[in-house]
Image 1: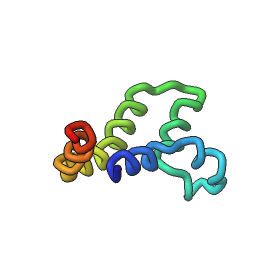
Image 2: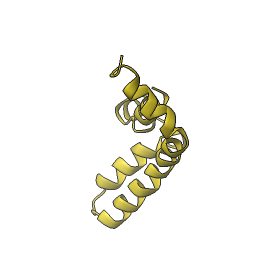
Image 3: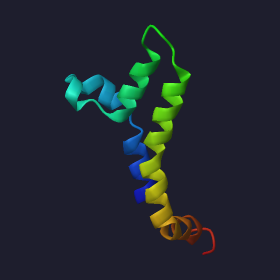
Length: 78
């Protein structure tokens, strides 16, 4: 549950886009969305920033993979 909740919070775009007005408080996903809304479209920068944004979640999953799989299969075998 922790990994799924962390992934949801990390990728949250709508709440941050609507409620955070100050530029210094914008989240990483809002910054990536702003790359797409500029006059020029730079897919290399977008894909590089998305790759960097996935690194913390992959590390979190790597350290908690055992608990994640155990939680998924706990209700299935009962």
